Length: 637
Image 1 (cartoon, one colour):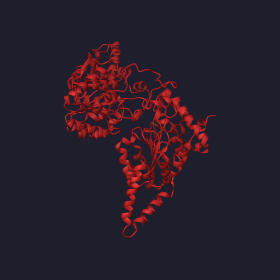
Image 2 (cartoon, helix red, strand yellow):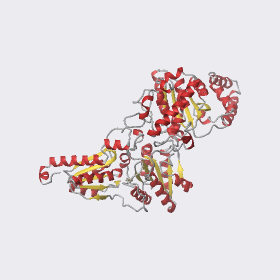
Image 3 (cartoon, helix red, strand yellow):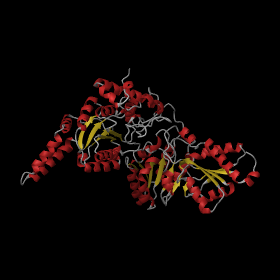
Image 4 (tube, one colour):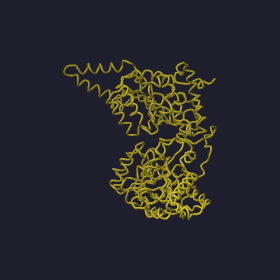
């Protein structure tokens, strides 16, 4: 019987020998590879922390002790060891377990994660709550080196060092090899620092030296200078020490025997400490080791080769955005591009390679990216900031205060807008229309296809003020855009004429709306289809005309119904005095939408051709029932 099959909770780990724990690590990797090869997911990060996950649950008493995974895409082994092994094959599928830690899913997930750089803040909050309630649990945060590029992590480190609460931060460093710092001297020093009495001896010695009459303070300062210089030479943790943490490491994060020893001793130290571990992304699966970027977040793949099960035949919106920007930048030297640690995901890799001096990857620091862009724009450049919709939420204040208030020509490319599928509520781009539409000076657009995306990027490059373009994950129609053309801000287009009702569809909803209109025509209903293109400024003339001529409007948008395009349409009709118009808004409800296949989610929330057709027909029937005179003159359908 496999060891993993005997694990129902972390308590079962404590009865295993080191040899069995080592075999368990192998089985965990095999199980993760097997499942993710079918479901897709964040594989490389999870493979890199298998030994660490085993050691943490072996040493600590979870769920009483609190374990927080920053971002959470490295928590697959954690899920397998905490009672979710039997349902692990439902990972990221509709109705299955989440790809991220989720409080509602397990008592072993004390804090929900999905965005980066939050774990230290959360861990400090849990630790302080423990102190205030006089509880006695331990708190551990596991944060990656990438997450430490986020400013929030340093804010939390600074606060934790100030409060001196008892907590352990584990730095999972998987971007560097096991360097010379893991040598005899560094290991020896780290072992000394782990000794229970070392910290007390050091404090007592400092107190003794300080109290030497006449020379104590000078001796202490001299000793501190020597200590600091030695620390710079042999310990890469001076920054954390300066923030008030006891720094431990670096250690090999794959040496299970040593990890157990280190964690046991680190657990019994007091105050805030940081344990630095060196790990390898994709550990144990050669394709992931060789290409950890691809396997950071992968589609389903064949285990033998690592190749994706379904070849992507269409060009993605991300690639169109990157290619268009590259073409424009070749002619306009004022265009610069900015990414927040996602140059590949946002299609900017080729731009970075072609114009390295005009490309800036700021790390996981979205607020900085926006203010940095604003300053570049102040000096006559045109920055383009490409960030996923869900992550742009982190920089709302900077968009308002630093860009839009100053009316600067910064273009925001909001990739992965709308539903994103299996990554779920932490990653759906469900709110960008709502959180951007209310900001003065901002031009807000959404393309129906690849050509329109190219046109919008070109148009944005010519605007004198700020603009934002939101577009979905994946591919559209599969077309290859031609040379982009200039659009007129605030002007939409009528794609199909009709007088019975009008469907106002934005972005990813335009082509489903056209399909719905075709089905409605078979029912003798003539549906007008409008693509507004611009959410702000909205083509109010086009909207009011449709309301007066059709009387029934159906608005379809892949955004929250609150504050999006539908709200803009209602505001327009209210301001214009148009009455007796039925408006049906199709969008995402006032919930955090669950994870699942895109087609399943769009069908559930009526953001598909059948859903739009059903809503249009229902709205039209309701209008006719409320207006019997018009119904009497209208043919049956």
